[in-house]
Structures are given as structure tokens and as C-alpha cells.
Length: 144
Image 1 (cartoon, rainbow, N blue to C red):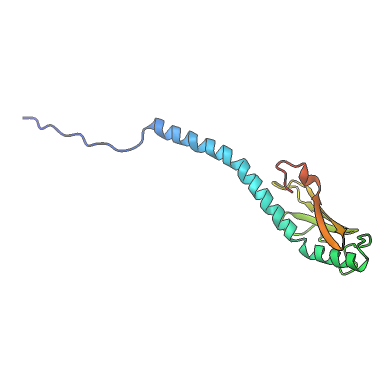
Image 2 (spheres, rainbow, N blue to C red):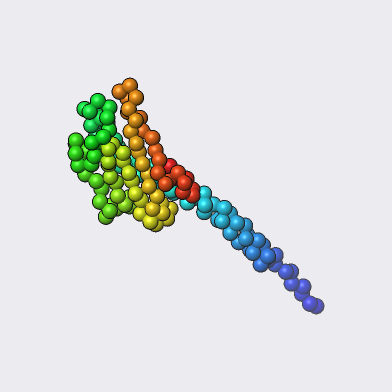
């Protein structure tokens, strides 16, 4: 008499199931990467903007001493720190202050790609406000 062997239930994935899973992961990655790059760029912008805090404070003091006028508020004068040189670490290439305007130039690597950021002080009724500008407004993604 022949003994009938029961087949064990084989568990696992078929090749087509694995291929579909890989395709779905690929599509999700393709959608997520641009979003991640944009997030990374905006995070780095916030980091660069935070580095301008001391400069903004000193420019505001300089403007207060000069009656709200920003002309003459330059780096390395009126208590404003010296410019950050081009060998600065991170994404910042240079930071300069000319007539109260802070100009940040980033390095040429992604996601910053050499864009510039400007912070311009505007005095209204003794209160200094800051406007942002530069080529970061026309970059893709918009970084400022």
C-alpha cells in the first residue's frame, strides 16, 4: 500500500508579488524625494537665517544710533561683526553686511545651489522690520 504524502502548505511570495511590491516602493520613492529635497532646503534656510541674529541686532543698534538710517552700518564697523569668509563650514559661503543689508551667499552644492538671501532692514516709527529677498525667491524649490 502506498502511503499518500500530504503536501505541506508552502508559504512565501510569488515572483509577481515581489515585483509589484518593488514597483510600488519605487513610485513612492520617486514622489517622496522631491518633497524631501524641498524640506531639506527649507531647513537649511532656517539654519542660515538663524546665523544672522547677531548681525540683525547690531544693525538695529547701529540704525538706532544713527536715527533710523542704515547707511554706514557695514560689517566690521559700528559694532557689527566682521563678514564670514568663504571658507565657512556648511552651506554658507559668505555673509556680508553693506549699508545694513545682510547678504548670504550659499555654496554651489544641492539643495542650495549658490542662491543668495538678503535681509533688508526697514525702520518705521522707530521699529525695525526685516524683509527677505534674493535669488532664493526664484529658485526651485523657492527657498525663502
